[in-house]
Image 1 (cartoon, rainbow, N blue to C red):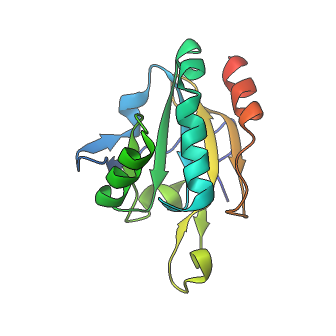
Image 2: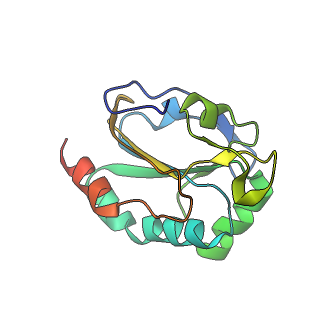
Length: 156
């Protein structure tokens, strides 16, 4: 079962695009949007990460930060960030630690038997790491409801 509003967000330590370890707890102190995406360089994931990047001024005005997470390697995520001018952290859950902790494993992604990815999911956390909003899709072809994410951020 996926993490829900009211839950404490499970901590994790993942590698960023520079292979540096980053823990969720280092992002506490600000509102945080955790955006799990199935795979770098796929069409909907590219649109989603670019939409979050385009909204950074809005997020900054609400004292919020965005963290993208996929099961891709640091190398793929770095190329993805560079190609799409993504400036927020992209973390690599290649061992599926965070994806499992959040209950959002998408089995057999893109018809690849045995290839688990993250379900497209957005979790909005308060400054203490409590989930204030959770959205999880079983359909990787659907973008998140950006208006709902903004409303959730504005609500606290």
